[in-house]
Structures are given as C-alpha cells and as structure tokens.
Image (spheres, rainbow, N blue to C red):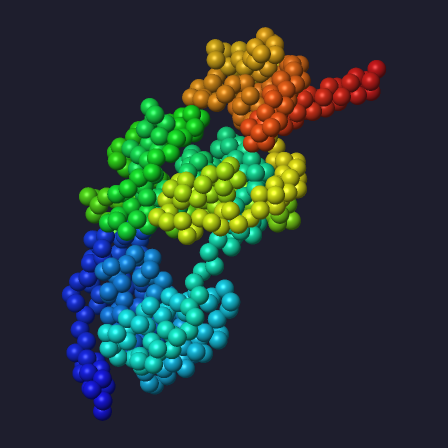
Length: 511
C-alpha cells in the first residue's frame, strides 16, 4: 500500500466533526446535525443531509468536512450551491457504487448535463478539489485531476440583457409605463398592499438586488432630504449593512415612503425595524424564528421570500406584453435591475458610473449593458411601445358629470385647475389632495383618485402638453416625460365624446 493510501486509510478512521462551526458573519451551528440551518445577513439557509439515501449516506460525513472550510470563509449562497451541485451529481449517478467515486463517474455526469447546466461542473470542481485535498474518504484522487483538466464553464453572464430576453431581460419603455400604471391602479383599488407599491418603485429607482431591499430598515430613508441609503451586498464585509449607497427618491415616492414608515411606527414597529418586516410580508408568518431579538436582521424578511411574495402580488395585476404574445408581463425583481442598468447605458452613463450605481466592485459585469446596439433597442421600443400603450390604460380615474357628482363636491383641496390653459375646474380629487406630492394637474390624469368633469376643457390641456413636447423634440427622453399623461388626457377626451354621442343617440331615439 502506498504512503498516500496509508494516510487516506488512517484519516478515514479518525475523521471527527468539530462540536461547532462559525461562519464569517458570526452564525454558528453543530455540523453533526442532519439539517444545517443558519442565518447570513438577511438570508436564511438550510441544507438537509438526511435526503441522501440508497448508499450515498455513507459519503455525508466526508461531504460535511469538505463543506466546513467554505462555511467558515465563503458566502452562505456558495455553500448551498456546493451542496446542491453534489446532490445533483448523486441524483444523476444512479445506484450508489460500492467503491469510492472515480473520474468516470464525473465524466458520465458531465455528459448527462443539459447545456444550461454546464456551470454545475465548475461549482462541483471546487468542492471535489477540497474533498481530495483533505484526504477525505469516498473520493479517488483522479476525480480532482479529471475535473481540473476539464473546461469549467460558469453561468452565461448577461445573456438576458444582451438579447433583451422578453421573459428575464430588461423591460422596454412601454412595459415600464404599463407596469407602473397597472401597479398604481391596483393599489388604488385596494388590490395591492402598500409595501408592494413601495418595493416596485424602489426597484425601478435604485436597481438594487432583492437582498439589498431585504436588508433595508425604516431609518435608511430620510424624509427631509428624500434620500434612501441602500445597503450594499457582495462587499466581502461581515454583513450587508456595513456599506451604503445613496439614492435620491422622487417627491411622489418619498411621500408614499413617509406614509408607509409612519404606518409601521403606528403598528408598533421600532424605527430600526426592517422596512419590509417578515410578519408583514409573509401571509402566515415565519414558522420558526432563527434570530435572537438582538440580531441586526431580526424581523427582516428573507430575500427569497420577499422576491416570491412580490412576484405573487404583482403577477396578479401585471399588464400583457406583445413580446410574449400578450401573456402577462413576468415581474421577477432581477428584471428591474437589468432595466436600471440598461437605462443608464442608454442615457450615456460611463461604465464606472453604472458599476457604482449597481454596486459592482469592478467593471467585468457592466459591459453587457453596452453590448446591445442602441439602434436595435430603439427599434424594439418603437415596435412594442404602441402595442403596449394600447393595452395599458393611462387614465385610471372615474369620469363624472360635474362637481356636484364628484366624491368631494368641491371641498377645499379637491378642485383640480390648470391656470395655464383655463380657470375652469378640470375635475376633482376624491382625497382632496391628501398626502399628494405629484405635479398637478398633469399627474392627476394618470391618478386613480382623479374625477374629471364631462364638460371641462380637457382639449386645451392636451394641446398645452403637446406644445411642451415639441419644445423638447431634440431630446427624446425629455420629450417623452409627459407621454403617459398625454395618453390619459386623450382617453378622457375620448370618453367624454362617447358619453355625448350616446346621449345624442338616446335623445334622437326618443324624439
């Protein structure tokens, strides 16, 4: 028997797990447990080793030993991915061999992978290299050599952005407008909770990862300066709340945020509570609280859960998109991040600026936002935009006969007038402008609270907006700022014309 084999044999007899292991974020657990459960910042992680059966359970001890160094020094996501890739390898292997794993087992595994799964070889390689380096039983040394010699592709970076994938890539301008209107209207009808509207707007405004929003606390928003301090993840720091990136939030969204935070305080949440608390986001609450009350992330919603709940809520009201044959628009949070980066590139931002705004430590993942030709992007938006706009109603309010028929009947603060075109009242606000920071009266036409009057001078408002648009003809993005409002005004004009036509027809029929 060789010296190496003697060493491996003796090691196999003396492999003992430590009593406790601690991650770099300070989370600890007993590695001998069948299920590893721990927290890492806002994340809650779980690995169930009891799932290994059919003979593969004899490799669990070595698997745990190979994972422990990663648990101590790497991100929790990496640890979970390592175990997940090994479990997938076991599932594709078939019956457990009555010998140590050999190079042929990994060769067969690679051959069975679909092209989109090729990245698993690279992930698995890291685990097997550690397994063999530690002389752990169950793995022949040739396995590490075999994997090291093979090309180890990772995930295809930025493909969804570069190809403008209609399901996973950035949203088009028309899709953003349609989704924004749909979410606003759904909230106004009471079909969406306020936290969903807030998160949707912050995703569009900051382009952060969902884990960043899960790390937010109410005190991260300053209602006086309209600035949001977004925690930065993937910084190799102890946790996500060590570094922050500041974002200016619009007055309208800031008003909503202020009201939302006040509502949290009134409900008994402390000022340093999570902006998206777990017991508010989850329908049934957490089954088990893994954090102590003094934990920095106590009460925070897990990013995976926050993403899932957001998709569940918004998918119910998502507008159709012609890019998917008029199926509902997919609304995964990652798409908002891609949209944010794409918009920055289209507006002429440098790679350094985009990397900074997206929280990247370097520029290697930023060039994808410049890979799609601006002309191609422009053509896509031109082709898709009109079809989307025709599906998404910009006007979300309720047409009424006159002030006497309105909800507030002329109460102070309810009258909407545009003195630039006329001193006549255009309509009423059914909330008397309460808590509104929008630009009146332009924004009123797209607001669910607006009640335009039948005989108000809406045509004059449209002409004024169209004239303003012409003044910015040289800057397409500036010119398009009020396009949704213009569409809403036109919808109101069309509705008024239809009502008058119906009345005329009714009068002629009774004459």
